[in-house]
Structure formats: structure tokens, C-alpha cells
Image 1 (cartoon, rainbow, N blue to C red):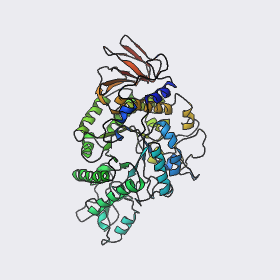
Image 2: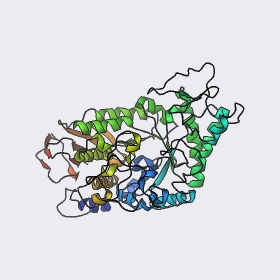
Image 3: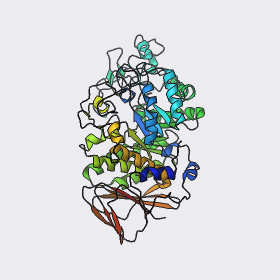
Image 4: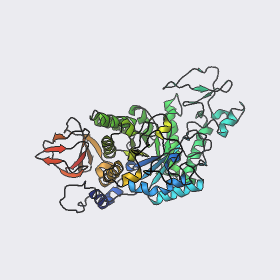
Length: 522
């Protein structure tokens, strides 16, 4: 994994005038926690500190001119991602599928022909690894497409060798049964009523069948051994055995053991969209990580309301819950993803609030995931297609711009673009870059615990990050007005500020609207 040196970070941040605490440009004093120390951290893998970037291939970059994003297009944008500071990529489904989103798979051993070839993908992997960028892919093992050859064979006859690979209604089945969000479970017609947690086009596999479990292990091994991916984002991880959580946990332990036998550093992050008390048990010798949906909601709530609320104590309780099940878990953090209204839409177009949301994400513990376009402030709201609109590279269009759907958001002269924001030092894009590089420079932000701060002020969100003998006090002004924060006896050096308009005198911190400052006390 690429580790950024303090010298690189300093020169980058200094160019924007946002490092303070020294009167003349000079490299900060080296100490334990520099590049070498970070590389020597005793970690189960490099993942607990990786900044991931989620890509919907269809929407990202088009290398052929057909309007559809593709694998070679992603390869051509790896330098952009590297410059942003990205160290890992999560790809939404890349397998053949009849749907635009790809979550109903028809072939687990190939890539979607609209995206390119397997050779294209192997080239992408090679180029990503050259840049020290790891790649995980969406693996949808809970269900297949209704058009998958397995299901097509299974539905033709009760004697099919694949019949028991799926779940069929018997005389005791309640065909009117519904799931947790009111969706019907049973689809089709007798004698072929089949079970699906999501919708009729995605029949659930029968994981009580050992042949199914072995096939999913074979698929995972193939992508690790033959293709070289670094891990998997595991869709619908809590639905594998829809009415038997204990069996879910047993399965993920089985899958992890099989994957680690192939690659000891494999990374398995699961979608367990539920409370920490529900997600926690999945971390006990099963998944390495689950997405922290509670924290995502708290980040949006705090930035939107401009009040700290209970974000820090709730996060600490969540981490304590996870620690009861695993000492080496990874907390995968994010603000929004492909199933949620985009950050900028949730914040009603307020760029200042979006910057604060990014500052929170990248100074809190965990392994942050950034949804493509989040770094430039793309908007998007349900239905799902319009949360996944084309990535905007140019102010007025250009080669590579995808056109897989006509956008409802991100249109007109005010639409954000990479081209425009790269040239603006005050842009959201450059703010993301600044915070990512800052994060990589500070061991306490990478590896540290989080502790509640005794310093509080209405409109401020404060906390302490600790690592070894290092202690960083982080202050965010969430509000639109200047705050005066009494630090009491707290004293320290300012190692970062997002603004030069602050003041720190006689224990009183004046922090301008929507800004961040970090003090080091050791």
C-alpha cells in the first residue's frame, strides 16, 4: 500500500495555505509515526486504514464512445484516483447480467461484455497494483439472476440437478409472507413458487445445500487466484439464510477460512444493513468488516442540522460492540453509497456542509469509502438509477463522458465537474484530497482510538484521537457562524487548519464557520 510521507503532505497542503504552526516553510520534525513507522504497524493487513473509492463501472468513464463506462475507461483514470489519494477500489458488480446494475448475475466467472473482456480486467488489476491500489469486487452470492443457467435448468423440472440449489415452496409455505420492508418473498406459479428476499428477478440460493456453498467458495477462489482481486464486498450478507442468523454466521466463517487459505490478506467487507448489535457477531472469525450505516446517518444528521448530537458517543459504543466479537475488525465508514441519496442532495446543495462531512469522515476512525462523484459534489436522489448518474469529468462534455442514462441531476452550467474543481484550490475535490493526504500523515488519524472531548460548544463537534503517546484534539465548527471555544487548560500545537482565519489566544479558540482545526498535545 502506498504510504504518503510527511514531506509530500506538507508540500501539498502548504500549496493551499492550510498548514500552520511554523513561520517559514520547513518540513515538520520527523518522529515515530512517520512513513517508516506507519509501514511497520502491527496490523492484520493494510486494510484498516485504506481509503476506498466505490465505482459503478457503467457510469464512470467510456473508452469506446458507446456511452457505456467500461474497464479500460477505469484503467485510464487510475492516475486520477492515485492523485486523489485513493488506496483501494470497490467495484459494483462487473459480471454478466440482464440488468443495468448487475446485482442479478448470469455468469460468475466472467465480466459483462459491455464492460470489456477478462483480459481488460486483468490489465486493470495489473495497473491498479502498480499504483499500490487494491481492488475488491462486489460478489453477489445470496441470489442469482432468474436468467442464470442454473435457475433456468432448475425451473424446468423437479428432477433437475440444480433444483435443490434454490428454495421452492412446499405445502406449508405461506405464499403471502412478506419481508422486513414489506416486500413479497414468494414468486412464480405452482409448482415453481420460488423464494427471493429482494425481487422476482433474483431467486435466492439454497445455502443449506453443500453444493451451493462449495460453488460460492469456488467462485471466490477463482477471482482471488486466477484474476488477482484483493477481496470482496459481499452483498446482502445478512440474508444468506433469511430466517437463521446463526447459520449466516457459520457460513461466513466457512467462506473466510476458504478465502484466507488462498490469500491470507484477503479483505471481506459485508453489507449488514442493521444495528451494530446485529452486525457485530458477523466479525467473529467471519467478515473482516461491515459497513457502519449508523455512523453514515449520524454524519449526515450532524452536518445537516449543524449540531454534534450523539455522533461521538454512539460511534464509541458501536466500536465497543464490535470489539466484543473481534479485536482485529475493520470499521468500514462512509457517508452515502449507491443505495442512498447522494450527500449533496441530502445537504440541499450546501458545499460548506459537504466539506465538513468529508472532514468528519476522514478524521474519524475506520476505513473510509467514498462513492464516485462524492468528491465533486454530484447530486442524486431515488430512484436508484439517478443516484448512479454519469460521473462528470468535464465542464462542457468531452471524450470519455458516459451517457448510459439521461441525468435528472448534475445538469446545466452549475453542474460540478472534475475539470473545473481541479483548478480551484477551494473546491470540494481539493478539500477531499487535502483531508485524505492529512489523514495519511498522522498515525493517530490512521490507527488511533477515539475518545470524547471535555471541550464542548454548541455547534461544534469535538473529539480526541489517540495513538501510543500521540494525542490529537479535533475541532469541527458545523455551523454557519464563528464559534468561540474555551479550551480551559488544554494546550497544544496547531498541526492543521482548514482556514487561516482562526485565532487561538489565552485558551480561547475562535473558529470560523464550517472549518476544522487539529491540535497536537504530545
